[in-house]
Amino acid sequence: MQLSSFLQRFNEPETLKMAKLGRELRAKGIDVIDLSLGEPDFDTPAHIKEAAIRAINDNWSHYTPVPGYLDLREAVCTKLKRDNNLDYKPENIVVSTGAKQSLANAILALVDDEDEVLIPTPYWVTYSELVKIARGKVVEIKSTPQQHFKISAAQLEAAITPKTKLFMFSSPCNPSGAVYSKEELAALAEVFSKHPGIFILADEIYEYINFVGKHESIAQFDDLKDRVVLINGLSKGFAMTGWRLGYIAAHADIAKACEKVQGQFTSGTNSITQKAAVTALTTDLTPTYEMAKEFTRRRAKVLELVKDIPGIICPEPEGAFYIFPDVSYYYGKSDGQTGVNNSGDFAMYLLNSAHVSSVMGEAFGEPGCVRFSFANSMEKIEEGWKRIKTALAKLK
Image (cartoon, rainbow, N blue to C red; front, side, top):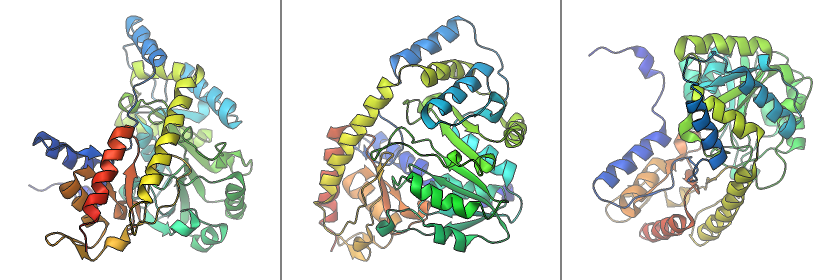
């Protein structure tokens, strides 16, 4: 069967692949502990669900405007002013079916054939693949655990060429948990100010899950704001992964371009989700803050458990709900039957031997590391790391 060559440009997301493998083992009756998927294990807060029920009863059941209902775009503007002191108008906002679609819209709207896109490592698996879909060229800027997985202004400057079109990053970062401070962002902004042709895509989906203080956005620097595309959504901070709603805030010309792209793919986002999102963004944030407190407790427990395992180098995450340790100490080792030579082998070894799922670091641009989520119950986390410790002790 002759399928399109388009399919050869990009790979299946490893995050989804590992989740699928875990489900297959569970279907065989095996107790798999999932430390792979980036999904809060909390239920959507009650007041948001009630808003959705009201929307159903009020018959919000028709096609929606491509960029989103006006009241939702106004709610996004209210949130950006309240939380980030950023001034946007509804014309700057486009609502999409998840932040992943927001990313795709922006990249397709900005990147041409062979344009270079700078991405600091480690990065979320989909970034590089979306650039490949747009026929751009991925240029990785390497960071290290010693840098807390954050790049310097000098590294950014050195990576820029006349072909550089876009820089994209997340803070808090998936997978490393790195959070850029205002001072660190200011240093990067100073570099960008010398290169006015470069756009900046800032993924802030983990904004509310921050262990080190106030979230800082690169859009706060006035001379950059028109070139910044903010990506955010409701999945992580509001436990609304299945509701599928993300959004961008950008210059009106970029927003119109994203609206044009989206109009040919999905048109407008789910009507009921949009009405619930207005409530999520403009009312009580107590449930969001309570979730963040629980992630703080889990983070402390995971770091305590990891310290008890030889050979693992684990920077403390400053945000999000992952750890991203260097596990290369175990490369070249075997339990007598299974050898571990890279992070893919490591992740599969844990899945098959310990029945714990994780995600290999190659997918995030860092082959020495593996991503583990702590978006699971404390009981599952403790049992999962007990299994991991036992399995790794067998590697010699």
